[in-house]
Length: 136
Image (cartoon, rainbow, N blue to C red; front, side, top):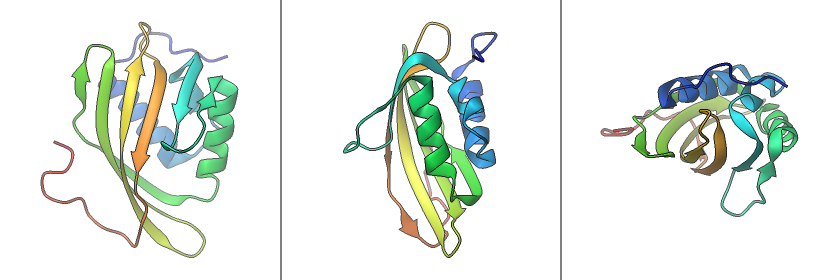
């Protein structure tokens, strides 16, 4: 099990999340960002992915067909152990390009890893730039 050696700041956590998504590895680098019992809800209407095994399995499936992934993170809003941040991604599959804006609602544990992630997003065909004021 890989554990973050020192407490990550919110900015460091978001950067590692962004990099893991863009590089779509086997899920091991994303797993390090979550507590062992973490809950990762990728959509309001899906069951949560639980623990390192569940998060790693989801991550492998979700990123398997994504290519040319570029992710930008907005400025996070922090209130104690809770963080909300917008993200904007462009990506492709074998046939199409997409724009995927969304937001993460995070609850951090004392050690700087996330115990709960809720994600909201919208998939739009084609590649689009963020609108004025995005991410602030």
